[in-house]
Image (cartoon, rainbow, N blue to C red; front, side):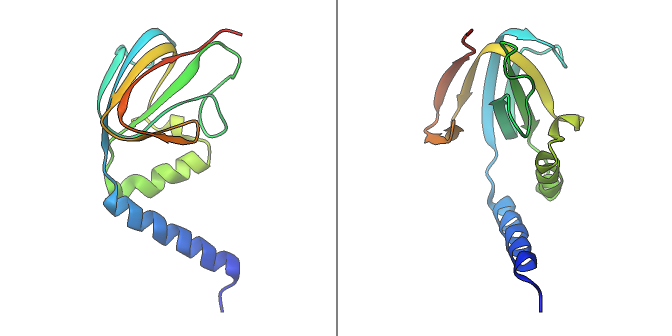
Length: 135
């Protein structure tokens, strides 16, 4: 008989696969101001995304006190590859993927018709102006 940890892991994987099949990709428009460390020459992004995160944190992001925040965008991907990207996020290695866009910004405007998570709270679709405040 499988142990509890194995059963929990199987349930977790089953939940991920079920949710991937229902996932609705959101269109996100980002206009960056005062961007640094360009990995591409674009200062705009306007397309469907799998993930759009602004952070300096544990799973992606860089230095916390550099006056910038990392913008990490995983454009829309085939649902079959979602487990791979989840694995990369959990391994803290998402930014090594060639299709991931990473830029550091001091300021940007984010517009999306989808609800979003802002510091742990669900926010309705809107236009947000993100500014990194100096200490």
